[in-house]
Image (cartoon, rainbow, N blue to C red; front, side):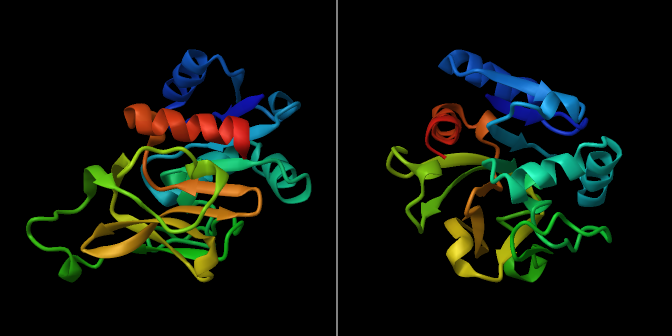
Length: 205
């Protein structure tokens, strides 16, 4: 069962609609009790880092999710700010991240982004797969995804980076460490490219 963590932040219905289309069982969890039986977790996120972290904490689900991911090794994928929350912290806020991946989230340096590349990084862009993982199997040549962010995820261990994207600089756009996956882009807004990725997560990760 794919369980989408609904703590008030993210495109919950978009994920549910894709899994319904794929005929893959999916549900949402707003409480600790609703996390029971989860075999895959999706941690969505949009907006400000501290806001998302605080909403997740206030939901009462953070400790249970941490137990599922770290101790029970339930596969999880973080999306956009949900991926950034997996790092130790972010330039965007003062609250600590979940620390699931040895990484930190940095603000794009405007001096490295030309006038033709405004911030936030918004719209469609390519990803380059740099490591073979189940999450990125069977994608079409030159896969493209929808992005919306002004901060990027920087791994302290490059082995955790599985895809990169160029926007002024090359930055990590997808990560994987053991059972933990993340996508800086929005697969739920990325048409057939995103559908394949979410299918991979449900069936292969």
